[in-house]
Each structure stands twice: as structure tokens, then as C-alpha cells.
Length: 391
Image 1 (cartoon, helix red, strand yellow):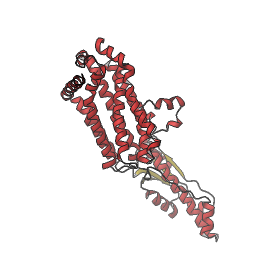
Image 2 (cartoon, one colour):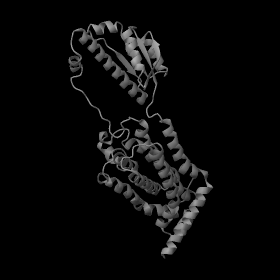
Image 3 (tube, one colour):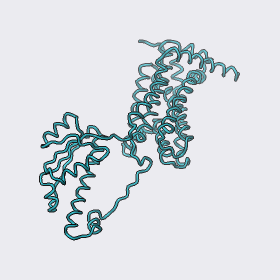
Image 4 (tube, helix red, strand yellow):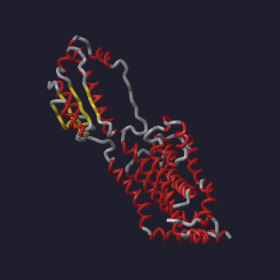
């Protein structure tokens, strides 16, 4: 009996492998799309942070002090002074045309007013329609403005006969020591790619799982598939999804190697925690795909469900906007996404290197997603046996 069950599962698996090899869309979705996305995004963010972002400078003072300030601003890695205009209107037109991301305005008589202690105002504007570019330029222009204020204050104090230590105590009475944990380089590739790329893999698993089962219903081959399993939905699913699991797990582990081996992203707790997380993510996503087609057992609706759920995962996972800052219903909803728990494992194990004791619940939750097909088994089996697809 046991041998018969194994043979049934193996025969269905061979049947599925023939279907996979007969349709190039499977190869594209299961192998090419995830691996290409990994190489594309890692290459795109190879520098870690955007550099040489163009800005315009409106220098109404045109003094040696203002020119020195502009040179210092241009020396920042993320900022490049590409345009110098005589009026703010010209700079504004450049920003509206999209050729620059920021404007730095130095007022008339800046050096004279600063030396007299009359607090001239430095103005800077950023185009936050490009969030990353605007944020980086805002940081650089704010930093250079603070440094300019400190430099002027130091010169005024020295002219009044104060010592440098006395002046610095007035300019910066409290010294701030900032330590960035997990990603001290502020590398956007580390920040984004470790979730975007597994998220794309999860989306592909949703779509392929739903498509492979929904296509059986659409083409009317689901009864033959179920008959080969001895009318057992469990054996039918195990046989069909076994080749998918092998392929997606291989691709997932390849992505893990690309992220932590080739790109040398932080991996504080070693390979095993993230390898286990990737395997569980693949299995959880497959179970979620079965659940989707079980809830909506038509190809069109199932694929729509998979697409929507997979895309929302990027927003609700918490790597772009913290879950704790979301509305309470959305916080609860985030727990329904496998990628959310993969993200928490990544933060604890790869970035922070915490003891496994603090993360074991996330592994259990990921594994518990594999129980989802049990809730739709009756509905899915009924659809496989009796559903007549109407185009």
C-alpha cells in the first residue's frame, strides 16, 4: 500500500515534469524571472547609494566664502553641483524640467551679514517626488548649512578673543554619537534587495502554483489528474507540486547564495538560519497558492488573487514602512503574509545576529502556512471533479 502511494505520487510528478517542459512559460516564471530580477536589482544598486545627484546653486553673494561653501557641497558623494544660476527662477525651471533634484540658495551679502552676526538665511529646496534623491540631497544640504553656521561662529569667536574650546562648547554644547546598526554603510542594496528579491520569488510561486492547478480545471484534465492519485487530493497535490518545490527551492537557495555569498551582504548568524527561512518561504508560498485556487477555483480569479496578494506583500511586510506605525487592522493583516515572517527572520538573524530563541516563532508561523490547503481541500476537490470551465 505504501509503495503504491509512492508510485502514484511519482507518476503524477513525472506527468507534471512533462507539462513543465512542454510550456516555456513555466521555465520563464520559475527560473528566469527570479534569477534575472536578482541580478538586475543587485547590479542596479551596485554602488549601494545613488551618487552625484545633480543640484543647482543660486549664489547671490558671489564671495570667496560662498564659493568655498559651494565647493564643500559639491565634495559630498551624493551631491553634484551641475547648474549655477543668477536667479531662483532659472533654477526652478531646471527643477521643473527634471534635470536637477535640488536647489541651494545663498543670499546676497551672505559673508558680510554672517561676519556681523546677523544670521543670514541659507535656503534649500528638494524634489521629493523622487524620494531617495530628495532625502539624500536634503541631508547633504542641511549638513553643509550647519557646518557653514559653525564655521562662521568659529571665526567670529576667534575674532573676539575666545579660545576654540570655548567656542565649540557654545556651538555644540551636546555632542551626538550616532551608531547605525545592521547596515552601517547605509547601503540601499542591503536595505532593499534582501526582501524585494525573495518577494519576487514568492510572487512567482503564487502565480505558478495557481496557474498549474487552475489550468487543469480550465483544460478539463483535473479528473484524470485526480484519478491517477487514487482520488486522493493530498497525493495529487504532492505529486504535482514536488517538481515545483525542487525547482523553486533550488532557485531560492541560488538567490540566497547570490545575496550572501556573491554580494557579501551581512550574515551575522551564518548560513543555516537563512537557508531554512528560504526553504520555508518556498513551501509556505506554495501552500498559499493552493489556498488561493481553492478559495477561487477558476484560473482568472485565482491568478487575480495571487497577483494582488503578492504585490500587497511588498507594502505590508514592513521593510519600507514600519508595521508598528500602521493602523491596528493592517498590523494584524501583515501576519497573513509569509514574506513578513521571512523579513523578521532576516532582520534578527542576518542583520542583528540574535539568538535563535528570539526568532523560532517566525519559523513555526512560516511552517504553519503549509496547513492552509486543509481549509480548502473539500472545495478544491469538488472543483477538480465537477467544475466545468466556461470561457
